[in-house]
Image 1 (cartoon, helix red, strand yellow):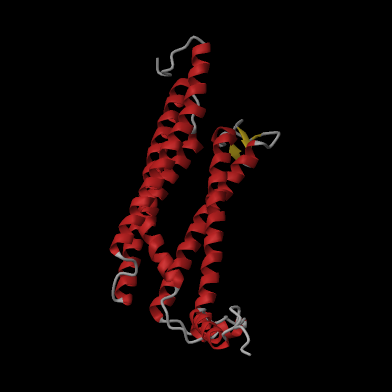
Image 2 (image 1 turned 180 degrees about the vertical axis):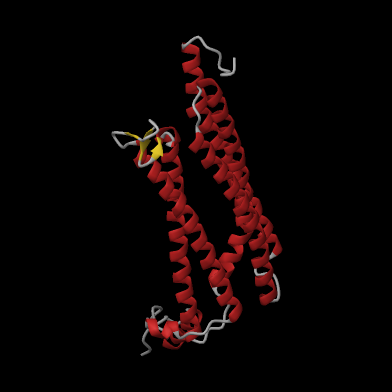
Length: 285
């Protein structure tokens, strides 16, 4: 008598074929290479050059932001010293700095927080770079000759970085010009010198212009080198246009939100105070 065939039979041959296909599609597990093994890996010259360029960028941004953060913190601490000292000329000083040259802490706290935020972002970027380089060295030890992912990521970042730099530079120029104008108005109406505040704003303007111009030239140079060594565009032209377009949209939204915040938290309270004092909103009148 024939036994009924079960519909829930197992086809071992088919299962073995599926397992083989899955194993072929999955990348091999990367072993934990020692630090010595990773250090002994010789990178392609153009990739090593790109890594050095990124490290130099991170170093100079860290140095610049760190110096300005330290200066801001110095003036904050100097402002809150309880007692001033009268020098031989009868001038009040703190840490041998004339009191008139010590800016208000609200201005310096904003500056310190801004550069501290920049330092945090730079640290995160450096950590990601080191991790990506280690991963690429591991790929080379496993004889996987592929374009490293951090190069593709960096090329995309170079495309958007131009947009971000132009927006950030333009915003700093605009805001710095407004702040300098406000200080000149206050200098005229309140008869206070605002020496340090004005000097700081001039330094910020000059440093921004230098970094802006240098960064644009550097980005163009690095993009050209990457494309030349890769013998083509690392990112397709259509994707590059989309990246730039998306970055412009994001910057426009952030800029509009920034303007609204400035209007709400600066101009409106100022206008209310002037109205309560029965004075014109225009400080010149």
